[in-house]
Image 1: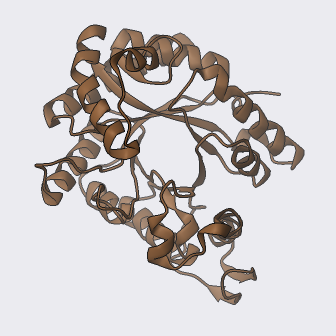
Image 2: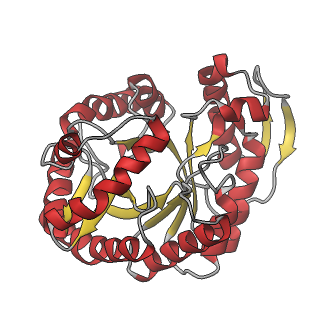
Length: 341
């Protein structure tokens, strides 16, 4: 069984979760994120993603709005959510937002649907968090129907049914939907069994630890009868490309430590960070050559056809983010594509 779709090209992209760090202001943070998307497009990267959160640590609750601002200043890059918190959203509204973005951008919108790593959205949107997995599965089913059928008749447990409903806008193509998976084998199985591409968050451990989820995804898709050529696996990691390996670690570590402290309430010591950034770790921090070798090895093992990196976490200064994007586009992506051919 192949690990990737036959003859699939490797895509490279970046994304922002839009975390806030004092003394940043929300308008400035949004402007920077839009500029990063514009830079990614100019540099020839394939994908730019924006995350969705509903807590005070983050500044974006509606990725489609920010992506629309990027669409106005770009021409070719795919504009994706990273992720849309489908567990708490109405699939009809989510479809409409991204179908509208698709029209605005000239056919470049993409939804990555995921569950939530935070409890707050369930309270805000009035969704029973104890049933979030069942709710997510049902909403994913409806979202798939909305993207493929012009007239929708559908019924579930958690939402009012639709009877011969036409949900606008309709597009000249099927709106792409991916499933964002945090590492759960059950989630990987579901992504394969519904026949959607999967983006796997590879944030800890070695690539070998991610492989069982990838293998299960492919076997589930095959068992469900989906053509493997229509599917694919993406890996999402944390990324910083420096001029040198040591310089990259020295620059990025304080910001990554801050990100860990804010998000998990834990102290990330330097030795653990260095291990995460080492040859077998998931963290993509180092020189362009070092990261290209690491991604090429992951591709060889897992067969991912997309790699996207979280580029701007922990208050990393704008100049460092921009230089990292440039090194990723000009140094890492071409090297990996060359080595994979």
